[in-house]
Amino acid sequence: MSVPHVPKNDRAVRETLHAWRRLTSGRRGSGTLVALSGGADSTALSLILARLAPKSRIVLGHVMHDMRSPDVALADRDACRALAEHLELAFVEGAVHVREQPGNLEANARRERYRALAGLAQRLDLPYIATAHHAGDQLESVLMGLMRGAGPGGLRGVRAKRPIGLAASRLSLIRPMLGLPATESRRICVLAGVQWQEDLTNQDTRRLRAALRAEIVPRLLALRPGCDQRIAHTARLCGEADDLVTTEAARLLSDVTVAAPRPGTMLLHRPPLHDKPPLVVARLLTLAYSRVVGLHKQDQIRARSLAEAVRVIQDEHLDPRELAIARMRIRVRAREFELACEEGRT
Image (cartoon, rainbow, N blue to C red; front, side, top):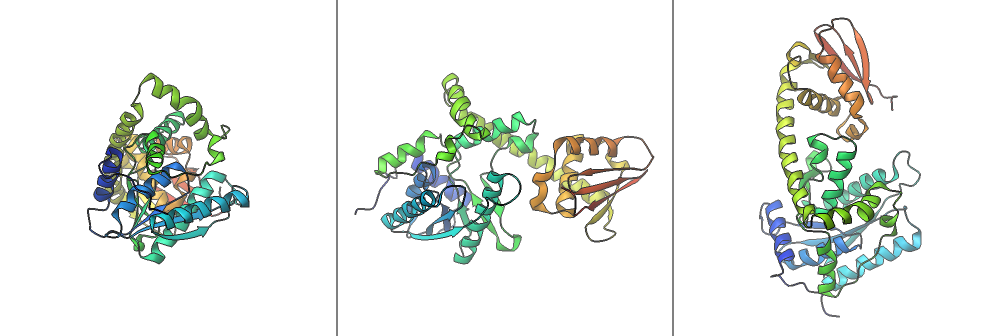
């Protein structure tokens, strides 16, 4: 069987390869694990990045999970393995079990999938994991952020590049297709004559993202063709603004931190925060939460409790008060406030 081929002079192929080089700092031979689910998006990304081999080490990685029936999961895995064989690329696989875990099933599956991919990349000594998120995914993420009243951090959508795994691993998650419209993935697969797998869970409109994809996004694109790419640009601007807020909040956190009286606690000065923008103080608290409770626990924070904590810390009252943000207890005094982890709190 001949190796599936996508032309290098195709605009979408060129843009994706250019983005990959930019995100990997253009280092020749930058090894990349491509997260391959078998769907059109990740199949298209695999077809494009296969052009980099053998000068760069490209490996296709698939993670099985128990959100679908075993037969469907195995069919997806087999299709991914077959694509790797056709592209003459190495193939690795992992498996996660999330159905019995407490909490949001989709969030658990996403977290465990990334953890499994990070483990595969570390084992193979590959510094990059590439996923096939595109402008359509970015549009959905921004809409979901708007619906929950998110600030700049929530409106930045998915990042083009971010660390993943333990800090010592120096792994990066990259998204080289983020600037492409959703329609390009299927076009590239058709161009290469490659069939993709359909994920029926994406058609379950009881899920918010699936409902947006099926019912809202097509109307927006009909009203304003190309708005997905323009909104992706807006998300990048929100990301830049969010980075500025984070930088200022980190500087301020360093300035007002008095001490860590014991493990899992922090003691901070109140007065310097009274006249600071609430947005910066809120980010300061989320940074402190990462230190006190854990970086991976930030998704437990609710906007309402965060806003209440900012209000209390910034007001002029001197009487002692206590409140909490998810698993972090806050004891507010006249001139200081203490943050402490509450292990039993949810």
